[in-house]
Each structure stands twice: as structure tokens, then as C-alpha cells.
Image 1 (cartoon, rainbow, N blue to C red):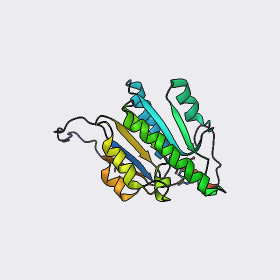
Image 2 (image 1 turned 180 degrees about the vertical axis):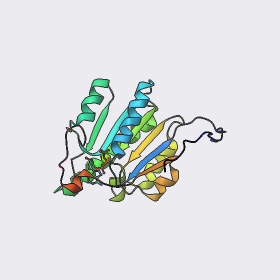
Image 3 (image 1 turned 90 degrees about the vertical axis):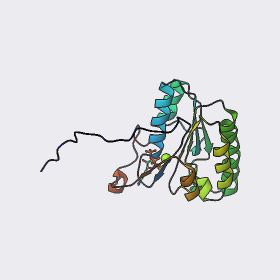
Image 4 (image 1 turned 45 degrees about the vertical axis):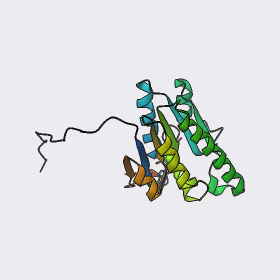
Length: 188
Ligand code: ATP
Ligand code: MG
């Protein structure tokens, strides 16, 4: 039997002040990076200054989102060397991640942005390439109205603790498991 639509909404009136948020998209289902890009698009549309850092993507990556961001004039940076876990030179991958983090950190602390995305930042944290204490200290030291969005699987519990909003993408199904290859405009 069909459910009847709700007739009353009893959401309590928010009592707090508007402030910058730390938002985490984690989990093993598809949609983390695209959710972060969706927020970036929304913020950009409201005239907020946005910037995207991607810890795994190669600096030369030109996926659909990179082309769209270029058209919008939103700065983005690939800080990695592609798929680091397949990289032959892990020390070089680590050095890239560390140098990239210093750039992202400088951007966060500069006060020049309203929303910064740290896409796939959970991986260099999990691998011990970035200190979780350093990431958390940077989030705490950011301008109070700045939003920071972090994505990646298996987010560190201390990142979850400092975040205001955490969403876990849970895989119910993925077309990849049925043998469907990655497709332009959907996966990249
Ligand atoms: P998207 O970039 O599509 O928002 P994501 O950021 O949640 O996905 P990642 O964990 O960063 O996903 O994985 C990167 C790529 O792997 C994407 O092309 C995505 O479609 C694909 N992918 C994501 N989740 C799964 C999964 N559970 N099984 C297979 N492939 C996946
Ligand atoms: Mg992703």
C-alpha cells in the first residue's frame, strides 16, 4: 500500500549563527567527488570564491569537471600523479602530496576563498603522507566563514569528529560490478 504524504513538518527553528562548515563526503559508494563539485557549483552561482584541490588526479587531468570549471573560471589543481597506489615511485607520490598540501593549506589560510574542496584528501592522510593533526589544525585556523569540503573513502575518525556535516556514500550497486566500463561524462 502506498504511503500517504506527510502533512506537517516539525523541523525546529535553527538557534545558531551562520558560519563556515567542514563537510565530509566519505564511504565506498559513487558520488563523493561529484557531490563536492555540486556544492562548488552552487557556491560559485552565489558569487562565492571557490577553489578545487585534487590529491590523486594528475595535474594534466582534463575530465569533464575540469573543462566545466575552466569555462566558469574556477581555479583547480591536480596535486597527484594519477593513481598513486599504482605508482612505481611512492616516494615521488608522497612528495607531490606533501607539496600539494602546502599549497592547499596556504589557500585555506589566505582568506581569499569562501569554499575550498580537498578532493580525495583522505588517501594521503590514510597512507601517513599528511599528518591528520596538521589537516585539523589548518581547518581550525581557517577564516571563520570559509567552508571546506573533504572527500575520499575511509575518512579518519578525527576528521569526522571536527566536521559539521558528514555524509557516507554507501554502495548499493555499481555498474562497474556488472562489467560496464567507465564512461565519459559519468566517471570522468
Ligand atoms: P564520483 O567521482 O563519480 O563522484 P567518487 O568520488 O565517490 O565518485 P572514488 O572513490 O573517488 O568515487 O572513485 C573514483 C572512480 O571510481 C569514479 O569514476 C567512480 O565512478 C568510481 N567508483 C566509485 N565508487 C565505486 C565503486 N563502489 N565501485 C566501482 N567504481 C566506483
Ligand atoms: Mg572521488
